[in-house]
Amino acid sequence: MYIPSHFKIIEETVAYDIMKQHSFATLFSQHNGMPFATHLPLVLNKENTYLYGHFARSNPQWKDIKNQTVLAIFHGPHCYISPSWYETNKAVPTWNYVTVHVYGEVELLEDENELMGSLHDMVMKYETADSPYRLEDVDAEFLAGLNKGVQGFKIKISKIEGKAKLSQNHSIQRQELVINQLEQIAKTDEQQISALMKANLKK
Figure 1 (tube, rainbow, N blue to C red):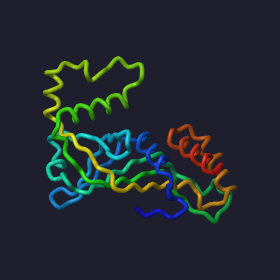
Figure 2: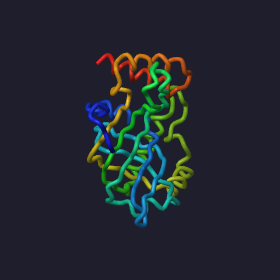
Figure 3: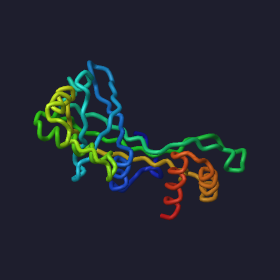
Figure 4: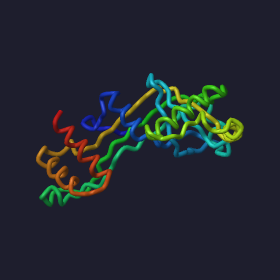
């Protein structure tokens, strides 16, 4: 990924947080000699060494992905930045965004306990704390049938790249003007980008 120095995420903890908060990722690999992508949730383990996920067995991507070095992209918040907010005619439109790219080698999960553990962790991540749903409460025979339809995998992380393009290449005055405009837009991405820009200015 092209990352100008002023946009580079240096702290790994920041990258981990983005991966956890925006865990519905895009996973790229080579399949039959061509790029292939699947959109799916990926869960980071506690040691920050592996990403866990699973394919539908009918998805051909998993069939030749073993031992490949793959790329998983985690898309954080993003939004359009209008040059009209700078109060000058010497500017052009741009896009602010946050993203993390993760590289690693894929291992297919052959152990049933490891697969069930990864599925349990995924359910617990997305269910609310007061949710009555528990994977272990699902009928065992029904769950066994569903498990035959998925192929679990894990990615051993070898490299992480993070980019936060938050108008750092503009003056503080311009950044403050952008923040002010974004705060007036009642959309999630715009609100998240404005909050990240504010936090960045305080560093």
